[in-house]
Image (cartoon, rainbow, N blue to C red):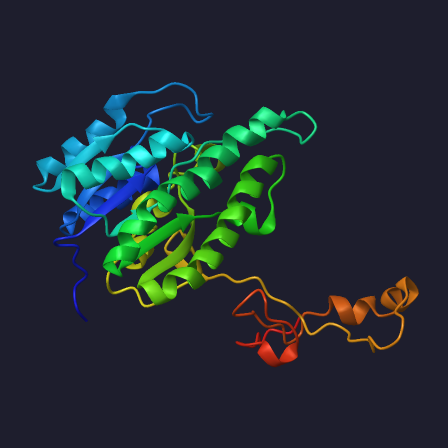
Length: 305
């Protein structure tokens, strides 16, 4: 097996000041990448800024003989997000990999959250990802090579109580990545998603009374390093990475119940067949959202319903 190397490559990691993002930046730099360490240095809710947070990671990388520069722009601001790519071009001349990890959070009951709470989270997670990748895309397109890793969450796939803004943003990221994977394929750009879980400042409350050693960010990093590397052969995939377990995740669709569409179909007809419509036995994933019908299904699920 060939060792994964980032020698001669340039990577952007957003939200790289602490936790999982820091682990990504340190790992890529250790393997030879020139890294732009982006982090606003704000609070979990997205308030405030501290330039020392990103700079501390840069200092740690350089202390180990690596090369990195700090960027303190907010990905939630479109101009600042573009500025990350402008800085990487001015400093290193190109970009090969973009890892979108920056995030924030606002929690509470749906009717207690304001629309501004939703915008604050979606602006950072979803539009922040869009803005950075949108700025980097023409560079990758021109060189016919690129790796994009976006960050989703189990919350965006399965839902979590009282974090609706976060769930909505993370679900949107999956759709974005699936679309760009199709666009990027003929351009040499691969776009994939990681759904990580680790003990970080955002999730520390979930690990109360436990050391969280097996949930440290460093055991998430190997999957992301692979997806950001030139050895990555996958595109449009979602992978969970948590506690040393790595697994592919896909939305599945059952065979359902087919009615004769040459005739009218009533709501009573649907109700009468709900058991068949709900049945997930033999469910498949679809390679493309435009596809429809059993003929396009792929990769059977053997575990019944």
